[in-house]
Length: 206
Image 1 (cartoon, helix red, strand yellow):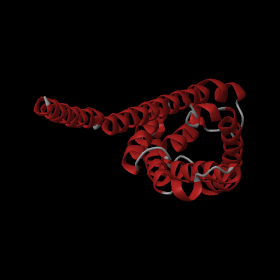
Image 2 (spheres, one colour):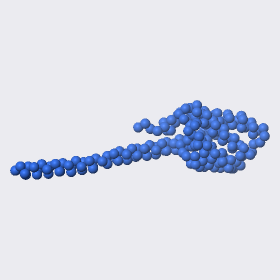
Image 3 (tube, one colour):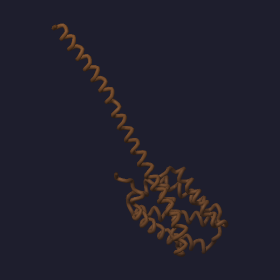
Image 4 (spheres, helix red, strand yellow):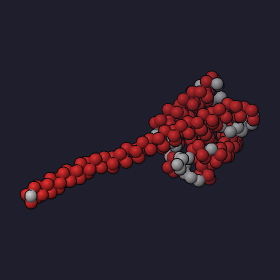
């Protein structure tokens, strides 16, 4: 009887050992599942951020061809440059240059006499903005305003020199008076829209 009891005890201990090992084997994937769920959450956040950035980009383009002509100012705000700058700080310099080139082509298509000037200027602005984003684009409205102002002014300098339609005193007046005014208006509009569209541009806290 004692032999049978000891044999049954060994059987239970062996079974218990096998069971605990199986439990450990089944529990092991839990960490991997956690990593996968976190990776899925990060991917979802990245997709959401890309969708919000794309919506903002399209809003700026629509404003450029609707609100800007409606205002008809001598020193107009440039929503295309704002759209490019906001996109450039979120992508690599090469991608930003491509976005700038395509935006420049769209802009030049409406002004055939300046074909190429806008594309070249936008390409340079996109590449430069993406390269310098860590310096200028921060969670600071003053720095953002300076970033928008500088981007628009440099664009105008490159555009009007490359276009070669304005010369002499008129060119100097454009680059030193009207372009800075346009850059200032663009920077003010950019900061205002950045504040209004902050929920679209910032990642969700959920």
